[in-house]
Amino acid sequence: KAGVTQTPRYLIKTRGQQVTLSCSPISGHRSVSWYQQTPGQGLQFLFEYFSETQRNKGNFPGRFSGRQFSNSRSEMNVSTLELGDSALYLCASSLVIGGSYEQYFGPGTRLTVT
Amino acid sequence: AQSVTQLGSHVSVSEGALVLLRCNYSSSVPPYLFWYVQYPNQGLQLLLKYTTGATLVKGINGFEAEFKKSETSFHLTKPSAHMSDAAEYFCAVTPTGNQFYFGTGTSLTVIP
Image (cartoon, rainbow over all chains, first blue to last red; front, side):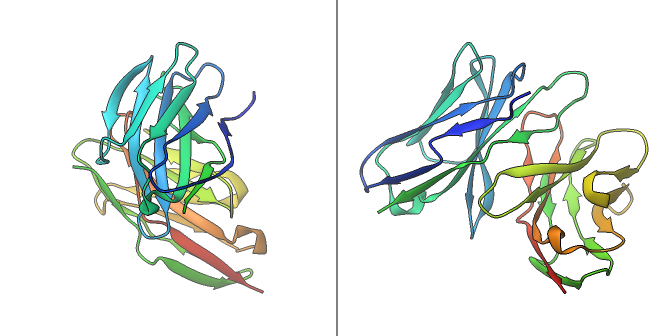
């Protein structure tokens, strides 16, 4: 099976712009989670989607949003970018059935805001 | 509330020595526990997991971890460190499988 894929892998944006990141989960996985990883804060949970519905949301401002499509692919959007949004954004998918809760991570999208 | 504490943000061991990375958790319900490894410029890779059953869990690359409920710990060990083990290690807990809580990570350096 193909793993979790994220596009693009690297992105440079200017303050005030908006950005959309894409994640394709492992085939058959219906849960997709997003994390922000920074050297100072570690992995911070953004949100989790299951069957096109947001089930959980972390403590991030409303500038961070996401959605999931019927094929389980997910996008996250950050509007009005700030310098502090520079981070590695990780997507993870999981099966969530039969007690199988482990998350499988993509390689991440490195976002740099200048 | 759920949380994970990883003691020691940086650990150095000699090649061939025991690796011990510490993880303590808090959870309001019986937890599912995980260890992940991250190599530079890559995503996280699952090393091992504890869900139910045997408390000593074996994972990939010779790593294992023991779930100790009384100590709320899930420490990661490997008998003999290899240079290729140098990476960032993350402990994670989830009470339901919907939301994961990660520790801040431990950077492992292996000294030749």
